[in-house]
Length: 116
Length: 114
Image 1 (tube, each protein chain N blue to C red):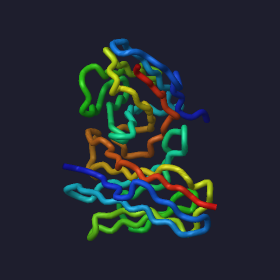
Image 2: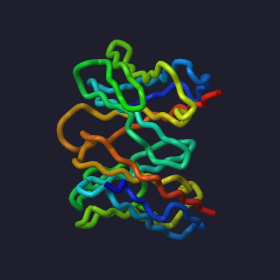
Image 3: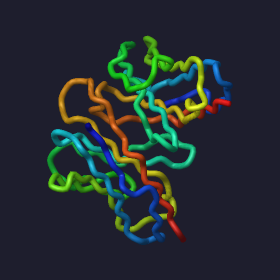
């Protein structure tokens, strides 16, 4: 079955430290992949997306993600975390096919805490 | 331009009642999707509407239903509420159907069932 897995439920980093959030996917073919962020009491905001091509994707707020087919991974990274990055992060995927009958599947999320 | 607007933001209901949630998408967006978010199950897809037609449906019982109007505004209804229906219900809009484009989420409607 198609799935997206985020192995880390909660991660704590110090402000200014680097960050990597893990995401693994299970699809028959390379899916479309997304990272969303949710701040407390807010909806989700798209950070970046991967459809095809360059495997290193740049997003908003200084985030980037690298698609690795051999590891079925799409990890999110940021070189230096700011206190405002504290939020919950969701990886999501959908089948890479034309048409409209393909739902977006979300991982369970990783809660990021940033220590001063 | 205005974002996705969901009303009401918070509501409390009792078991057996029914509830209707509303979602106004970004102007020009014709696709509206609904998700249920709970601590245990995470984000689960409910359904997607495009041009007043349901295009995709998740694995939820028939108590969960929705519709979309000609102005792209959407409503979802949950009948015979159960305690387990307590959740944050998120609406997302996009220009096209099928999640090929970016989803824009509203802030959600938090439903508590007592």
